[in-house]
Amino acid sequence: MVEKIGIPYKSVACGKLRRYFSVENLIDIFKVPVGIFQAWRILRKFRPDVTFSKGGFVSVPVVIAASWLKVPVIIHESDVRPGLANRICARYADKICVSFEETRKYFAKYSRKIIYTGNPVRKSVLDGNVADGYKFTGLDKHRPIILVMGGSQGAQQINELVRGGMEELLKRFQIVHICGRGNLDISLHKKGYVQYEFLNEQMKDVYAVSELVISRGGANSLAELAALKKKTLVIPLGTAASRGDQIENAQIFARKLGWGVMVGDVQVVDFVKSVEMVYKNKLNTNEKFKNGVYDIVKMILKYK
Image (cartoon, rainbow, N blue to C red; front, side, top):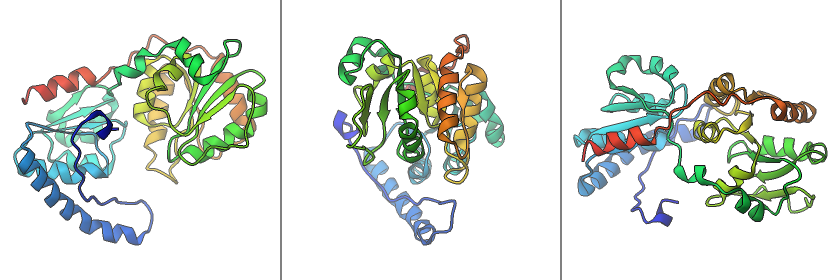
């Protein structure tokens, strides 16, 4: 996506700390210093005014190298509870942007650096066109549309739930199913059901036409859905597959907006009932979530 819009792109080695035993953990330890050296060399040549990081293990070498070169560092934490990468990066950051006021306590040691900005939401997803959404999906206006977003890591569980409950759901709803790369089921041909591996430019129009969304608990996706005021059922990744950050994100949004949350070994019959319940429930449209784009951009431009 970055290369497609003409932004110069460089890659560096980075080590990932897995939350389970793996020989790759030992190998990846040595990738970090290599990545720091590579990032240092690239940044020294590029001479940036500021470094902005959204976290994740890929960010650590770049943030450390930028700090060594005296380049100002701004990091942003999307989740309620920060991951290991941003906890490491916080030491080297000049400013720490957070999406939730509740996140401040996790960076208490660096309280003077913290700025509550909210999560950045792309303007493009807010400008969807309903007519274009119907045209793209080929669905009609007679039944409400459910948008299902499994995401790369969580597609399998959500895919199985949607396909297991499809006969019942299609009695009342139509379904747009983003099932992840390699997860299309070409044997499925149902009236009112369309599936895609991935959507990019068309996403805004599909958002516009959907009345209910089923999603994982990634903070960026949830922030978009909150900004769009969509009824949402969140099925976050559990602690067996993650550090539990998606569960905390989901609980915050659910408490404030009235969304539904399902955690653990979800059964198809319960899933279908929850979809129907969330659709009937009234959404709390008075709750406001701050769009971090404006504050973050202003902060970055101060260093230019």
